[in-house]
Length: 282
Ligand code: PAF
Image (tube, rainbow, N blue to C red; front, side):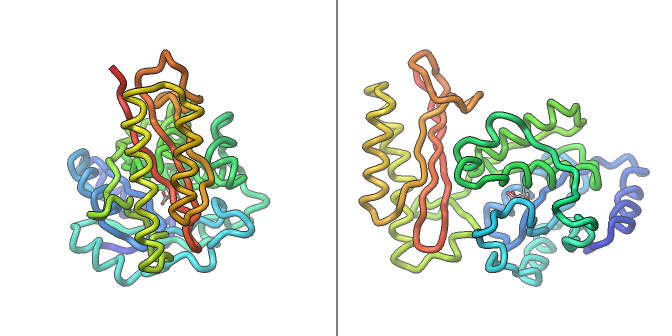
């Protein structure tokens, strides 16, 4: 695996692959890699010849009181995992390389509407930061396909919309969430959890499964959301939101909708965890 941190080197390495007619699969990450990230790499291998990963803790997607300084940075271990996974190129730029003019003067990309809902409501500016960095990385890597994990369901939706709206010639491949045996969705932020909190955190997915079960019997969405919220809170976490949505538009679900997704976020100790469950009603 070749690790590069300059844009010139990245472009020249990737040109040599493209000149040979090889397709490029891309997995952007913020590092602290776990099984979930490795499943994105596996998925990318099914769609492309050459695999490029990036590790960049993107300051633009963190709010002022968020965890950017403490965000786990484990480059050496990450490199070992990526080598074992047969990744071809790792791009590890610094913030100065990505945002040479600083964040305030940087052009940004924002998907209207949904970027202010759900996680976008609790984390103002978060999705603007995500779509801006992903657009920039897409321009640098120019991949044929790019893989994103469905734990970040809203993020996948935003990126898919950006790609369609801006006619980017890139196929977005959504990849199923990897879970611990307990059901807890794998996330770099799980490393903030104590053993007790890890136990509490399992209630997030358990509640989503409970919602799925309830929806097979009732479509009183507001009532189900209210009980779900109290279940999460009763486990010792603090619910940020739990909303039953149309899986395509992410608008609040109506009784006509058959493809649903339940989006949830909750605070557990120092971590803010997100998860979701997709549901097809008959
Ligand atoms: O999902 C993530 O890890 C990040 O939001 C991403 C897509 C790498 C952009 O920084």
